[in-house]
Length: 215
Image (cartoon, rainbow, N blue to C red; front, top):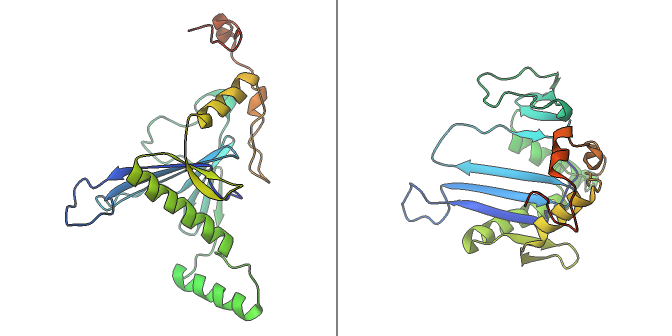
């Protein structure tokens, strides 16, 4: 997607069933938030074989990754819920893109790496800078799980710090100011800052000196 280091990472889970001396959770979930205004959620377990969909959910649509390609689903945030609350059956994609899958993913990665070595190119499928981001995110998740704390990534110092309330406060301040949202470089999810509230919300009245009139 073009994002790199997360700004905030937290992890949950635990050893809920498989007590055999291990210290790795048998159920774990990682939530990574980014300054660009998006979030990564990864969950995994050794307790169930039921799969989790690989999707990128956006304001204007969703990309679902499937074997041999991906499906695109359009979304319209101005008309309410575009999909049912419960997926009794899979929705029909607006577009299907087919991609020839490699015979073996690991073998394809090694072939690409060796080809880049021979050609003296750094543009591998998994370049060092992307690897550094993945390892940092995973390391922050482990630290969060073991310490029970949410963590910040300091871009300037390239260091991990303990998170505080400023993350939520900054986003809430932007909302109250009607500011424009951040965008991932090269992507556009619409200008959420100029969305007009429905008429019935005017009953709540305007904010006065930063105070919610409903409180």
